[in-house]
Structure formats: structure tokens, C-alpha cells
Image 1 (spheres, one colour):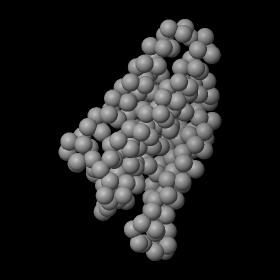
Image 2 (cartoon, rainbow, N blue to C red):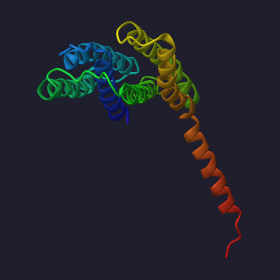
Image 3 (cartoon, rainbow, N blue to C red):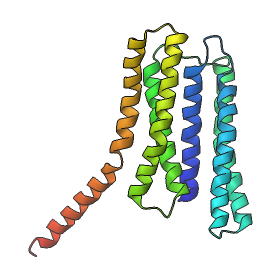
Image 4 (cartoon, helix red, strand yellow):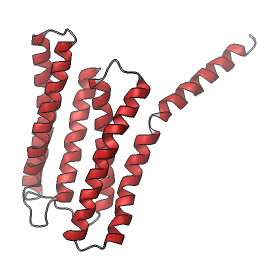
Length: 208
């Protein structure tokens, strides 16, 4: 399951980077797709190399790790390049989002959280679920806070919003992805507890 989860993490991360590039691009920009590729490809190379290095350290053959690296690196990069092509062919290097930004920002945040959660699960396979959940939260929340802070500064100095307006927008942008990140680890535990209770109730029922 490592390879599918890593590929899914890469594709989600590439979409999140593309959306954030569209949000942070200046109105005259015609290089949203190129900017997202320039950010995503080096980042994903480092993460894929880290995964390959951890695999070799755990005793997996070098040849197998090289093949895995090629697959895990190339497919998400291909997805990023496709988004670049769509950006150039359909939006003339855009889209640059100047209205309706909050739903896109929230979507990018949730995609980023999902990618971080999958990456932590893949890169720390021997760690307990609770520790992995805490690690994903510890990695995601500061990162998303920085993104929201940068968006607020952009709104004040580039778009002309007041600090009060941007503070409200920043709280809104922080709220949903943060709530998802904090509450998601409890969902599987609650479901497992419910399944155990249901099985226990069935076992106590008298035989007909």
C-alpha cells in the first residue's frame, strides 16, 4: 500500500500547489502553471528521494528502490505538467483568481492536509497511529498558518484590504482545514469503538 498512497499524496500535493499558485499570482501573471511546476517538482524530488533512502536503509534492494523512485517521482510530476499544459492552453497561463478565493483556499488547505497525512503515514510506517496523527498535525498546522499569513499580507499590501478584513478572512481560511486536521484522527477510533461495541452486543445475544 505504500506506492499507491505515495502516488496519491503526490497528486494531491501537486493540485494544492497549483491552486495556491493561482491564488498568489499577481493579476498580470501568465505563468501560473509554470510557477506551480517550479515549486512542486523540486519538492517532490526531495520527498521521493527521502522515501527511496528510507527504503534502502530498511533493507530493500537498491534496484527495487530505483524503480519505485522512478514511478513515485514521475507520475505526480506528470500530473503537474498536465496542469501546466491546461493552464497554457485553456487559461493563457492562468487562472489568476481575484474573486471567489476563499473556497479555493479552503480546498487547497484540505488537499494539503490530505497529502501531508499520507506522506507521514508512508514515511513513518513503524510508528503508532496516534503518533503519526500527531506528526501530521504538527507538520500541517504551521505550514498552513504560514500560507494563510502570506495570503493575508498579500490581501493588505497588494489587494488593498484592511487589516481587520484580512484578519477575518485569515480566520476563515484557517478554520476548516485546521478543524479537519484536528478531528480526522478521531473518526477511525470512533468507528472502531462502535464496531467493537456492536460485535460485543451480537455475541451476547442468546442463540435462537
